[in-house]
Length: 294
Image (cartoon, rainbow, N blue to C red; front, side, top):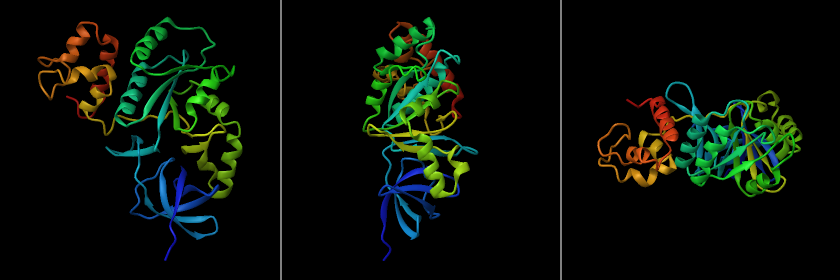
């Protein structure tokens, strides 16, 4: 009888999956019945040769972040994440629509979102500061850091301890610099995985899980990790706006779209100033981007 072991997916390399077991990394192939795997997944696998295995099954996930794939399909980016750190900066121009999208997805995926204002040593923007007041009022934690100046990193490291996290944000906001500051031996670890799996050229583009020195795991997803709205309904998008939640049940109709619907408590709260007009306008923009919106 084949012995099944429990392993942690470090990275999906396309032609193989890097699985960690007992402090070693094993290159595994996957049975056809197993769905597409992502960094952070827990799997059952068997050893078929030295440092080679076969993944037999996927264990239940606590959470999942996905990105749009071909057609209407989605592809997993990272699994079993506790928190997403949304990184932004004064430069490049801060895309609050993207931040709101990340927040809405996290609210619907049982994942805690946290905001990271990188390059905080540079000149401040009054526009950004005004927007941040709204997020702080909604209860979203905010970290002001500078990866290049090593400012604010101790508080960030403390928040990462004993959790599975991922950094996301626009290109150019300094995610790579932050990741390198948080994982000082990242290059060594990447090279070790590459050497064992013989897939070195893939590890630079695949999302990879790293163990942090202080405890906890950080999944590094190179490039812009776009977690699309695929799989999120219009109702879930509205629920993803934290300040809408207490008003949604007060709407006159259960299927209220929060547009020009009669008796919409959300829109009334916007008009009264209880909900940020700017955030509401961004909700409308995100809603218009959804494939099912009309």
